[in-house]
Amino acid sequence: MAAEATGNDLVHVVALLGAAVVVVPIFRRLGLGSILGYLAAGLLIGPFGLKIFSDPAAILHVAELGVVMFLFIIGLEMRPSRLWSLRAEIFGLGAFQVGLCAAMLTLLGLAGGFPAAVSFVAGAGFVLTSTAIVMQSLEERGDMSSPRGQRMVAILLLEDLAIVPLLAAVAFLAPATGGEETGLAARFTSIAIGVGSIVGLVVAGRYLLNPLFRVLADSRAREVMTAAALLVVLGSALALQLGGLSMAMGAFLAGVLLSESTFRHQLEADIEPFRGILLGLFFLAVGMSLDLSVVASNWQLVAVYVVAYMVVKALGIYAVARILRSNHREALERAVMMAQGGEFAFVLYSSAMSAGIIDGEANAVLTAIIIISMVLTPLALLMLRLLTPAEKVSLDGVDMVEELNGSVLVIGFGRFGQIASQPLLLNGVDVSIIDNDVEMIQAAANFGFKVYYGDGTRLDILHAAGAGRARAVLVCVDKGDIAVRITELIKSEYPLVPVLVRAFDRGIALQLVSAGADYQLRETFESALVFGQRTLETLGVDTEEAADLIADVRRRDEGRFEAQLTGGLQAGRGFMKGNMPVPVPTPLTPPRQTGRAMNEETAAVLDEAAKAGASSV
Image 1 (cartoon, rainbow, N blue to C red):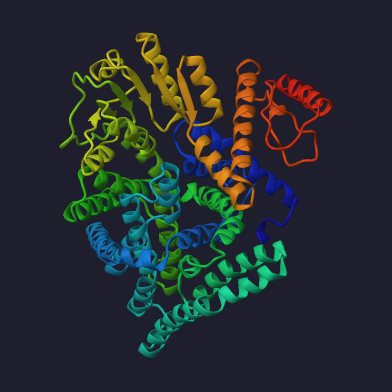
Image 2 (tube, one colour; image 1 turned 135 degrees about the vertical axis):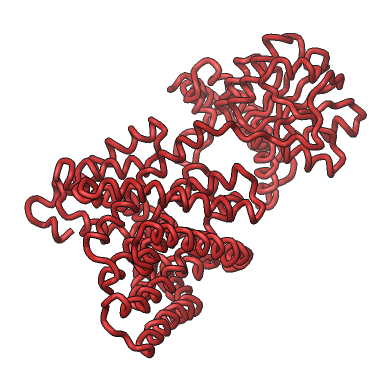
């Protein structure tokens, strides 16, 4: 931010943070996404808004480190074995999409009357999708690890790799358009330097990074580990940048090389705060960089090519997806999400301008086209969600609920429901099972379970499933609020049917009691008690004494739960035994002996402490 050094630098920092803090939550609340919020905030405080910043390029240069760190964290999640498993998607799907879209966009430029070299550079730059926008969108939607998300990640990786031959192509095209003469040997030398920088980074990552972090960990200096994490990210980015390649690719390779390191989680925790702030700063700077004067003076050209490039690229992406047998919905979603240009286009256009392929005005117009396409992407995704119907679940091989008559109805057949059903089935009880997860129903059939498709929150489904005729209903769903809703529905419609419910946590257990559940069990409670008893026995505690201690834990928990029913979730703290040096309360009910004598005076003191804890907030 050297260019912004005049005046009070603190004003600029406050403006950046204030714009993000105010605008981004508003856009998130409106369902427009955080990316569009950052872009709008940048436009607001930039040269064409409040004019707080006059040189967004200086900020953009620093903010690109956010993309670098983002790709480093992605690399940490991409173990070499996992990356190898994606090789078909990276070099098959990715290369097919990049090649086809580049050809289509180049032809579009030629059809507009532009020279071949200019058309190629403009189209190839637009092919390079914004890694930051797509990754952020996948992360917000929770699709990063899904198969369709992984395919998009593979395409983005290929596009990052494509910047290398594209920059080489710019160098080859330069003499034909008046650039400096570059000998063939010099061109091959630049390529060799790039390859050498990759090899050097791989060797360093393979043999130096783990020993380095081991030494630093032994020093037990927390701040030095953080500094080392930043050094690895920025150093690897710099190494590949000096080799004429992408900084982001360098950071990604460093992440992959450290993905199997014992320090992986520590590195991710150290980098994450910097990544989040700088990535937000990147989008702010992109918003500031939109030159409205260029857009105004060339508005027809910009408008036509923003729409044309996005539509043609989306058609190419959709065609590739369908050719490679993706379904219509996935192909359409990928086409809309990846239809924009990206931040690496700025690098390619700058290189083309330096080589004389395009002039300064063309660079500004192309940059404006890229930025506007980035701004339009979140809006396009929002429109896609509004206009496309919800994805229909395929019910092939799955039976719907219809007049079931089992003695026991099990709602939800995940891990908990599967285990809970076993003693009933072994005892010959007639069990009816419903669930709304088609994949789980199909998988259960392979293990000999007949599970019907049905939503337990619907009264008609409960009636068809035989809830009113069942001797008991087991609610084994894994979401606490859904369990409460089902319990309330059953108890209001069939009040005499016993309802036994899996509780997610203590708060849900309290709600279930209020909803009328006949029995509720926190899903981790019993397993934790068994685990604790085995730990005591491992430490040498007598088996009988360990059992007595566990029984005491149960009584304390029951006393605390009773206190919470009337006093709220914070009541009953006196029943808990903490690890701070404070008096230990006992339940209000008479305690069982646990192998240790307790005199009357001590019992009275602890009993008073329990009463005080039960009424505390």
